[in-house]
Length: 150
Image (tube, rainbow, N blue to C red; front, side, top):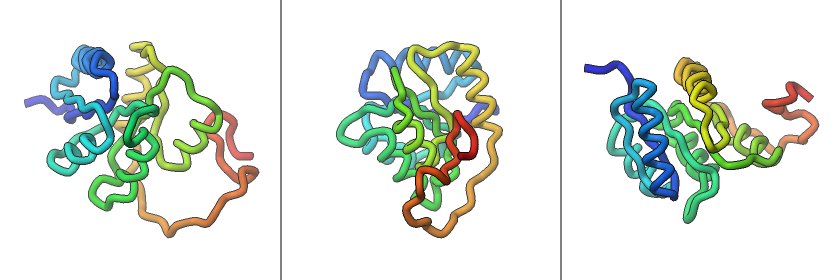
């Protein structure tokens, strides 16, 4: 039996789900499943134990950030490693996703070596702790992932 955790791919483009599944299989993840929207992803996550979610940012009816927020607010799913993907990220996208709890960001099309690096980083991460909700944060006090502490 393989030690690689099952992976859930969430992307509204079926071809990309197949491509990411193939890449993950090549990297040694034999159990990869795909769904095409956020509500399907939540249903899958609540019915089976996955080791990682790789989700597209721009989807309907629930985008990747909304899916991530649902996962982080669920006591059972809150520690689920989560990688967000998109063809381009704005600074605002990265900031919002970081604050929502994204573990990593990967640009499409994927570079296989970068994907391997991100997977190692995310799958070896520490569990989250439930914190008391924080009020609005000034953008001057935010720890920006690419810039460091401002």
